[in-house]
Length: 187
Picture 1 (cartoon, rainbow, N blue to C red):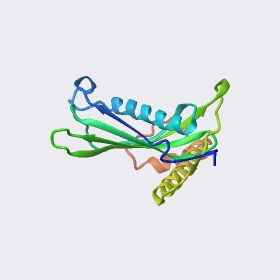
Picture 2 (picture 1 turned 90 degrees about the vertical axis):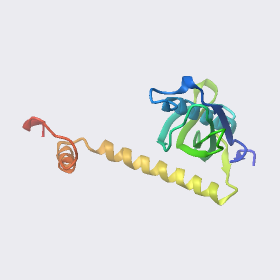
Picture 3 (picture 1 turned 180 degrees about the vertical axis):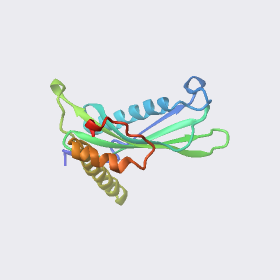
Picture 4 (picture 1 turned 135 degrees about the horizontal axis):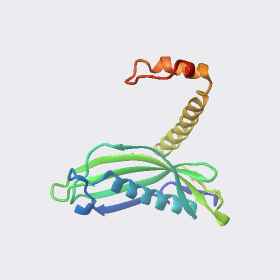
């Protein structure tokens, strides 16, 4: 199966010490530092799977679950969960470890969609995935399902264009924390 690779063949772990220059005004590690590390590990994982340069095309929700402290070791575990023709969904789990207490916290989770870039800067076909565990099958299905939901959300957002649809939208959001203050000829 030369056009297929196992999930484990590209799994990547990146570990870095959190230093004072990474902290924000509150003394915690800045979220942008964590995002940068997540992008780095997503690239490494995707490039290993694709055998090509890869670019980030979307990030599907980054959950900041717990703060990361200066002095902790942060480990980012990345795995290709899903592949399309040239795209890959890389799941990332971030954990921090207090070196003194050995407490480990799950701090972040996210899904990065990466696209392999081949010759002439065009998308390149990526190998398929060999799923070898129930967890790998579950993750592949969940990524497929998120892709379908995102397509549906985009269609729904794009649908609201006519005056009638806008009027319906205004009715739906009246109970939210907003005031619709449009001239009557714009309703």
